[in-house]
Image (cartoon, rainbow, N blue to C red; front, side):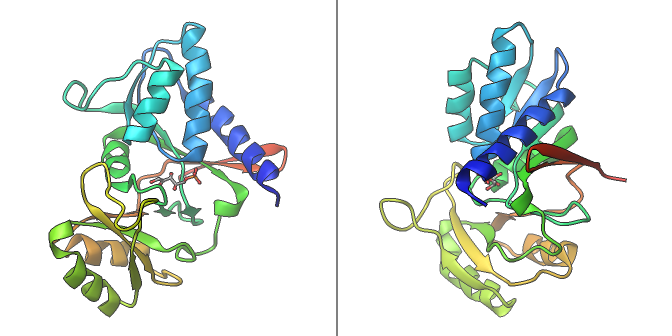
Length: 229
Ligand code: 5RP
């Protein structure tokens, strides 16, 4: 597939996700290139009179939402969200997600967990039979990143400290580091998530289990909408 075709699939999925938005809703605003398209389209609707408020899941999304004219609130003001729309790096048939390619996984997971409905928007290349071809991002406290890299290695991964454009390390919005962990095929995402959740110093990771309610896949000139049973 060409980049133009992939971008068209992202646009179609982003556009379709706005069918779930209702006047007066409080929205979780995802991060990444697909979510960026959604923010632009949402901004157009806000300029036409739609009244919504959003909680951005990254500083980049905050800037994009501001540019698009979407009113924003913080989690100090709203404790529950009606709907979150976000992208993903991989989606499996059970709606398990691998996220964090953009490094925003921590705020993304918090916002998703506070949402009544989570809609995931992806191009067709993100749909996979099993998670794990994409290295799993694990957010860790800088204090212990080296021993944690070793512990993650003991779990079967090959952790790499994510570099920034200026050189290593990339620092997340919450001032942590990311270890990109190539595990290969992840047969049991919930079991791996539980092991990572139990590791002191691991702040969070890109496995989103049981969080997605709806997956919208852009496919060619159309979209496929799937609801969790
Ligand atoms: C950022 C994410 C993104 O949702 C994920 O990386 C997908 O991004 P894109 O839409 O650019 O492919 O999890 O942390």
